[in-house]
Length: 209
Length: 209
DNA sequence: CTGGAACCGTACCGTACGGTACATTGAGCG
DNA sequence: CGCTCAATGTACCGTACGGTACGGTTCCAG
View 1 (cartoon, rainbow over the protein chains, first blue to last red):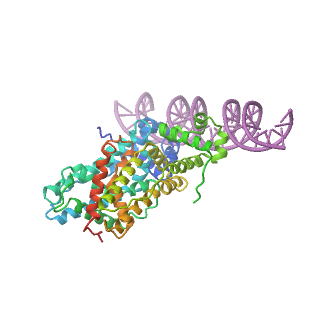
View 2: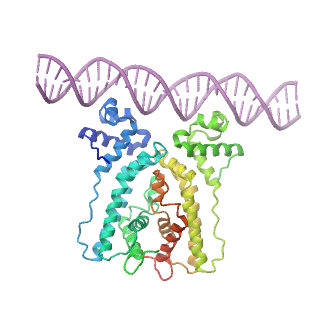
View 3: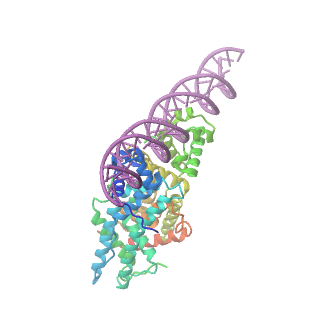
């Protein structure tokens, strides 16, 4: 995986493209429209990104390059530290998933999932979801090393945590549901999910089979 | 909500449209292509469904009309009956969500979520997800009446159950990920989710705050 | 100053699609 | 038979978009 980067000018154009996508969806993201909005020429677009699909892919990698996922570097001296770190992760996750740029890019990739063997979907999974999962898994394993949680399969534990936090609100938001039930009481949602996670994997609990 | 129905001929055309959508995604579903594939005229399409958006909406309601969601009519004499009913629900849910027609329609609605105030998304939620939720809520409340589970908010309990069952596999499938990790060991996934649900809401457990 | 590279703006081309019009067919029915 | 109505299939129109070509401008190196 090459971490292909772009020039500042190209980044500015990609930023503009994201704005167009967020504002009007995929239909609003035309090469002519982007050229007009970004004050660049269509010829430059094709020179830089190859074709329209290349542009879409570049938008995903560019957006991913903006999001940094810091690993846990706290001391984790107490179970409460760990719980708080999980809650922070949960709130971050909810925040990212309900962001309009994230929603727009996910809608774009899902709408194109039937073309090119879901190339855009693979990019979203690799650059968007995988870093988040890595960060969470590191956190979970750190907690396990301290004996705060118990599980055999980190991936299993992570997926359960994800399900408890996100539920089906991501798909509902992708479908256009107004963000009721999420992001209004985000901290409480996060705390509840973490509490449930500890009920399943904390203290004397045992990972099922 | 009017349950507008269609003539057999129109149903056949809609079935054909679903096939086209599943096979080639939204781009493959053109009015000319559908007319050719279904041996009907474009003029009939516009007469029946108004315009292309009307056709898409009709496809969703038609597909929803095919899926019946029977309510629980079992005796629930033992906690095991209840657990098994939940497991059946979980397997059905996984099966529906990973069906190719469901995936194609969800992709379609998500891809159009920026137009018409997400009209297609609202249709999917109303005709697709809501009936499933109603069935599950009835099941959950039946279990609560028997004292097998304890919760204050049925909606909360349902969403948690949904998250435990589906996790983020739905979005991953929508993004085009091959169905690894789901539907291969579907019964085990279902059993695990139900076991976790009981750990949170079963026997002596108490709904958190 | 000069050459060239990068880029902008615009005009242009081919195509594909949504939507409409129309001629034709065929079934039901007096 | 002749009328009506529905539906088919085809031809057509306008438009919008992806992609290309080209002239003009800026900027930098030598």
